Length: 206
Image 1 (cartoon, helix red, strand yellow):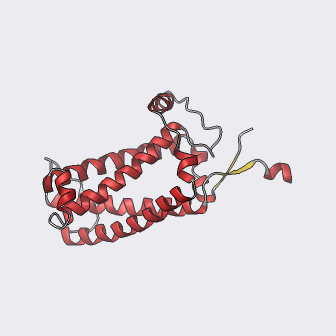
Image 2 (cartoon, rainbow, N blue to C red; image 1 turned 135 degrees about the vertical axis):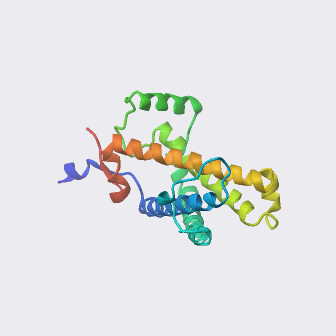
Image 3 (cartoon, helix red, strand yellow; image 1 turned 180 degrees about the vertical axis):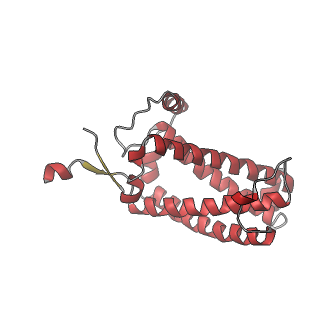
């Protein structure tokens, strides 16, 4: 019995698991409603298919967007606070070097990225998680600049004004969606990683 139990290792603490799923839900709502808001005043010569948007019309989309925003912000405060004060970020996301990230990305593209110990993030995972955190911070700040360009004029000024903030918001959203899609593909390619974000544990490979 003890030998069997020793094969299981803790991968994700409860706080990380709960905030992960809340974050995923909030981002899904914000992206779908954000696309509907974008369609009301496109930045570029295309619109997102209405079937992929949420809100039905501009006012409805804005309501969904702001509701998800506060959920995302509160959840983010919990996650970042836990990550900093518990040492989770220090243990899981650092150290990180460009060379290690490039090496792991190339290995992943060749299908040779090792996942022997799921309790340890590889450099590509560390970079992806940090990039998502950064994207979300930029999205919130640029969103505030778009929502209240006068009250948050200092933030809007840093982004080149109202239209600049819209561009920053759009490209941060696009990058976040791309990272999320890559993350989903990696989970599909290595399916044994998925149960760990639910149970928090993984069987160590012998």
